[in-house]
Image (cartoon, rainbow, N blue to C red; front, side, top):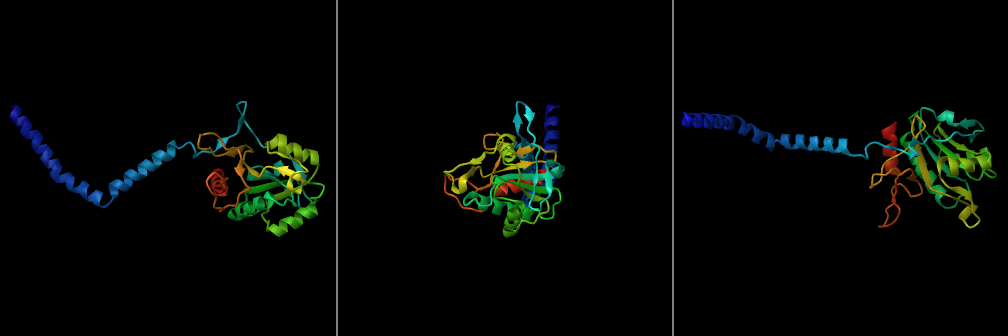
Length: 244
């Protein structure tokens, strides 16, 4: 009886080989198995990749929201954080006579503007740290010279103390007068990314921690040597698209 059982099992294996092995070979030759497996691996990697979802910035366990503000824009209109509700927007602090990083920052922002020129729920909030000089008229001329034309890009001026409080305490982006700095003011060349609910968001760094802000003071496509600050504008555009 045992011999008959072995013979039966052998026949089953033989039939399986005759019917299915040629089909498997054909699928491998056609790259179907390899492609399918590759796709499955990519999906699995994507699902496990912690960098896919943007992080919230948390302080004492609470998600950090963008602070409230109300200033005058380049058109002379009053603009507040309420005008950005339901929009994904970027925040920067700059001044029009800045001879160093501001031109790079705003050139980068114009390129981002152009990426989202037809996106109604995208915006940019630019706050001058030299409000004594940067009146609405000056800001309007500056906007024209840079090609700033997105309807949701406001260049804002107002009370100096409130702007500095917004920068230093509200967003945690340093801004201040500095006689030793070029142009008389010092500030960080970073952009904050705010989601539709008003929360500050960012992708994670290589160690799994939130980057918090995006480097805006390096040209979008600049080639850099090892150890130099790398551009992050492409990353920022990707992340804007994620939360839009």
